[in-house]
Amino acid sequence: MDIFRFIQDIKNHLNFSFNEVDKWFEKNSTILNYQPSKGGWTVQQILEHIYLTNFYLLILIEKGAKKAMRNSLELNLESEIKNYNFNKENFEKVGEYGAFEWIRPEHMEPKGQQDLKEIREIIAQQYHQCLNYLELMKNGEGLLYKTTMTVNDLGKINVYEYIYFLSLHAKRHITQMESNQSEMIKNQKK
Image (cartoon, rainbow, N blue to C red; front, side):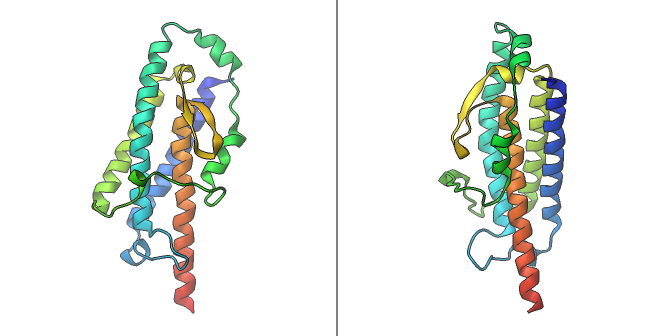
């Protein structure tokens, strides 16, 4: 396993996902507040949900990063890197909106209590947090600690995979926001 390439691929995915999410903050209020005909969240609610989910995932990522760095003092990092095989296919469904049933916890549901500008700033900070954790674990240390991820039965995943999951979650909701916008435009043409 080329761990440096793996880390760079995660950085690239994060960069793409967060840049795409950021573009949605520039949309006009009609798009931001459009209520899909079959129910579901508005773009503004989706953006808040992304921020909330990132917040809770980053708590786990921070704990995992600290434990992984501690483990790097005792475990054989070279052996872990050599034996690691990233099963990308297991994760790809996370980035596909509607690919599977996803029941999120109530604390990740948007409440509409925060200003969109503030949410945008926090999401930008969350992006930098992810990059900082990848820099901290730049030699493969993120492989040395695993935490259970129940979403889509992923099971025990390492810290890098948690960061990738966070990025895929954003990608999933980019598709949802695009769907909202397409439906709104289609309805306006009628």
